[in-house]
Image (tube, rainbow, N blue to C red; front, side, top):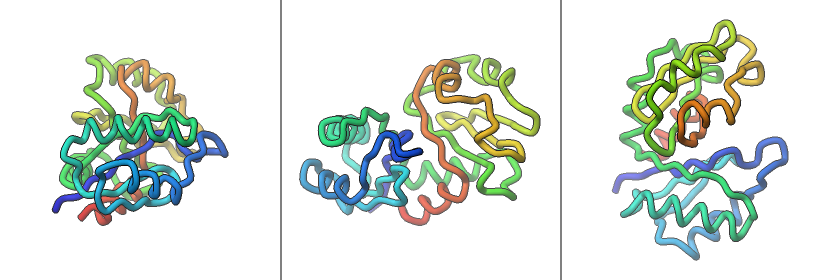
Length: 177
């Protein structure tokens, strides 16, 4: 059986959008058809067997989180094979896994997204849009110094996304094997 990850956007960050993982796992086991559910770290990584209908599973999980925790957050699915392909395709030096992030997009990005974002890059930053992943190589100061805010990214990309650093993505690959 192949496995997937359902990625929650911006939960448990700075005390905002609280979605406790243990109650979430219990809720998903009781209220969904997801199988072999686990979570990885509090930032919202749900590991499960591949759902029969990923779009339906994401919509259902999103609604359950709204109903139970009062947090409306996109839920974005990637299979093990999609994670592996994304990492294999990423175009940047992966020496610092904490500064290299994959933003997994909920839908297809808008045309011209990269052009719109390039003017916002700070020195040392690079971006590359490959399919439904935007790779961001942050400068030495990391994500806190970027001008690529959630609102800026959403507007330029035309779709929601959620980012994970390369170390986390590699861990998710192992957990979905």
